[in-house]
Length: 175
Image 1 (cartoon, one colour):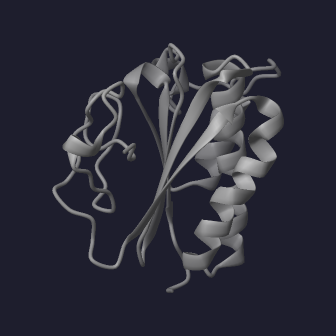
Image 2 (cartoon, rainbow, N blue to C red):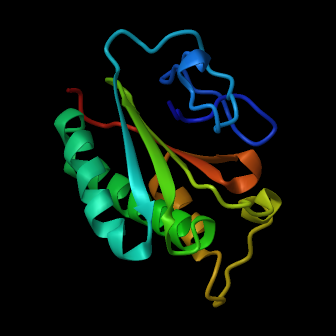
């Protein structure tokens, strides 16, 4: 089971996640999580082929689940755009657009937050380059997606050397 990362050198705390480390796949590193998911939280896991062409359909699958628990259309749009960017990064950079690689995605939603964790098998990237304090606007072909995700989501954090991203959105509407 893949879940959004919690406190580590590369990520921040959130109370809307949980894991039982005994259910992690043997090939996945164990992450530290709180002991339980909030009572009103729902969770779903997805696994997708690591190819760019599959990203729109994968994004649609995740959003079908998110929309059930996220009534605010503005939140839905923000989540969808950030999710599509994160999945595209995972397919292109982490999976190298290779059908033999898989993207793992876990979504946890409660009354106040939607949290999406996405992990790919790639080597990651230098997460210091994603530091919003040191980021400079650029016309380069890479790097703008992280800024876009950060502008749409309440929190964007990385783990496992950048091969995992956690997107957190504070929800405006109550379910």
